[in-house]
Length: 391
Ligand code: ADP
Ligand code: MG
Image 1: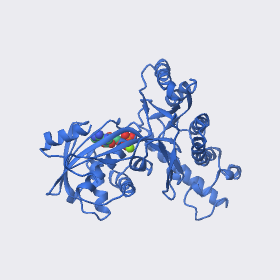
Image 2: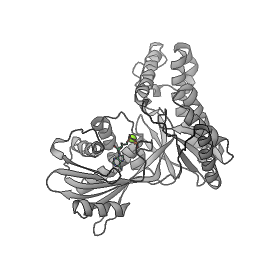
Image 3: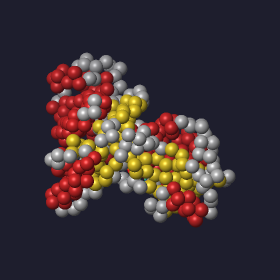
Image 4: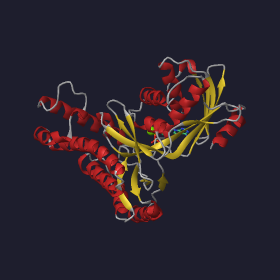
């Protein structure tokens, strides 16, 4: 991919690459719908990534090309505005740097990716992180990966206008090979959690478009906010509490008495999901893959029955995989209502589980579900460019 982008930069824009950067996608292993409740999440970066090659320009213009979309755009850094297409993610990276007071040089950029777009593996954050790293290096801005992650998040939220958590850019920027990240969305602290060498993950695409997901997602966010207000009204939590994170799962019996049944189920998911993040990390610390798989299965049941964000295709993918002896546990990953599932499998049986998922899904739904094996991989980095130091 590195060669493709540098060659395309030469072919399309007649420029020699000065900087090449890569940033991976991610899968959230456990901790779903907890981010906007200031809770815990645990993603890992995966071995699918976006690569960007860039060369600086003197004229304040950002010329960008995506080899995957076979499209080009030219953006004026002095008046960045939303265009409503893929180039918004690149403009957002430049805009966010400007908002933080940095002076951004013009550039020619070419991008390509091995990530599917729009299927929940965070191709958008990978694009943002890879582009921002490239722009920062070309403009000689000494930014840490942590700063890049925060600025990419700001750009995707406030320029592109996607209501998203810090999970995606943090995982892409800060991931570490063989590790998951325990991210606390309240204080933004990040702890690297070692995964067992035998931990292998499969990701299955349900192929269900998340067309209606946005409205339902907002509904869940509002339900959590309402439940917090009710908990305050019943003096179960301090008036100053900002989110459901102020409540522990030990408060559930008292909450059940003051919330209506549906609201209670939403809150029960959020509070027990925070616990499951800790349990998942503990299972790996003790080398108990079967226990980690059990945590995933309980997380799935909670998403299906309490948070009610699953669909039959996601249920089926998990049930089919979990019936295989080489699968430790499965759950839907991402917001739900479509997208993908993640499965913790034994490395020796990974191909057999993958085949079983494909066959079982095709039998049930009459179409194929794509299954990929992924590894917990290193976060974003600059790649060495011939004749240029990648410090
Ligand atoms: P996800 O992040 O789950 O893949 P999103 O809808 O958040 O899904 O982001 C997908 C969008 O990101 C695409 O529609 C496109 O606008 C942009 N994008 C991601 N990767 C690329 C790429 N390689 N080339 C051009 N645009 C891309
Ligand atoms: Mg995204």
